[in-house]
Length: 437
Ligand code: DWN
Image (cartoon, rainbow, N blue to C red):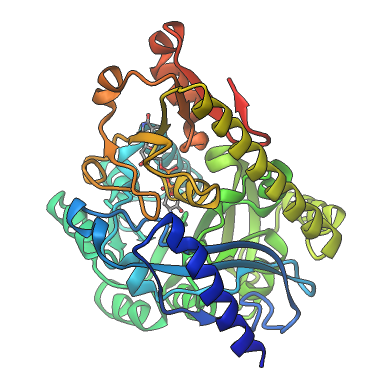
């Protein structure tokens, strides 16, 4: 009965979406009934974005009038361990077969990954005899730094188009999903890894047991697995809700992650915070008993306990605030549109697509999205069908306002546009409340 009711609700909602996007059709998805961190069934729904297109499902002009798949975007928390995860999962092949995000398109990201590689080489005294594997290696931006430092490297990424770019730049990259199976193949062909990096990828991986079994198989006995991800506690504090999308099946924190790792005889020996992507953490992992556990690990566990990441009240308050932010964003933009202001988006981001679709904003209200990623330019945003153009078009567009759809790089973007701001361009930052800067 519950499933029948859910399907009826989806169909009703699809009809309303089709008023906004006549090409909308229902896509295939699977419902998740188990917490992927602690395996309990104590999952509780707390936030619904409604039906959403794929977050990186940018369209060519030819595909604008073809059926566009939408999927329910609902978020649960686990009252046993504090894990936050999506209720519905889209097939990873549907999400990552052809991928348009590239790490090298954002120079702050390039700098961030350069510093990460240098920190790991120094801290763990890596040398040419050591193998570093990057899981979800994208275009090889992180691995290229290890290579420059003389370390032996290997990437693995499921996106065929992106893996081809990395291999063309002599970054050896396997085009596959990382799993227990692919890990065994890498062990046979390359041996164990002194460092395994999983940077902004953990959230994208639905099967944590296959992932961590693969890490256990491949990690050198004194090796380190470094996982970096946007931190749930920051997301709860800043209300940056648009990082919740179908690529991010999980919004992760230390406690639930440590439970999943222990199932595979792995443990966290250090944790560090980093401001990137609105607040992320770096978790350092080893085989159990190999490393001394830093006191910082308990600091994070205590804070998660104090905040109450398993507490229902936290999540109902969060959801209330999310709907308030959406309503304030719609109100602000409606008043600007009423004043006949020209509005663009700055950054053709997955998160920006969530915000635009959640606020039902499209090419009628938003003239264009500027973005530095060459293979996003010329495409159209999913659902909202806004043209993506190069930043060089900014003067021609001459907008009055720019929504920071790449708010995580606000400093770099504002700095780059200092002169335009002097001439009157105003930026809108969506979080923690929509604000004209
Ligand atoms: O996990 C993920 C996060 C970390 O990165 C992936 N699922 C995909 C991606 O999410 P996103 O699409 O929200 O990414 P970013 O990193 O926020 O994308 C920034 C975008 O902004 C890029 O497309 C490049 C663009 N950009 C720009 O046009 N001018 C960035 C800067 C700094 C600029 O000056």
